[in-house]
Image (tube, rainbow, N blue to C red; front, side, top):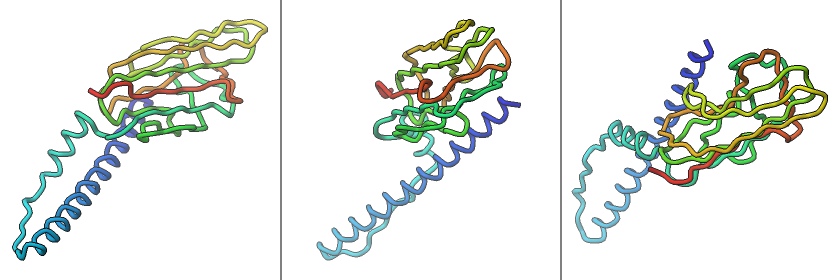
Length: 201
């Protein structure tokens, strides 16, 4: 069920991106029309025609190769605590400090890459003293990339990871609880999830 919900969320976001790109192309065509009209008026000609733009093909090419022009970077901080976390349940980060490129989606705790490239991701998870271990996984499209560990005992523990990944436009990256039920992740700005586009491809 979580996979279906995640795929539906990703589909909705991609549809929004498609609408945004379509509007952007329409705006560019309108500006081009205006510029060409101005130029023709200046030179005394008025019979300007524009060829229809293949929106779908342009957008598909953008989705696959770029999808977004400009920087891509996000930092999400966990302010509130999250308890009773089940196995494979997403860990949420409820304060977005930075979201250039709008790739991070706070309600699901998922980053969906707006462009293809080499990315850097890091996450830190703090848990309060518990009798069980805690494992948090960094996920790419349902595949485990890295694990952070929290040890049981009477002290607070914090685990973290930093990785470099080749990510395609539309891929999703998130942090989830693994291996143990009823886990607790401490907020109060001790837990975070960040990433940025190092080099577009």
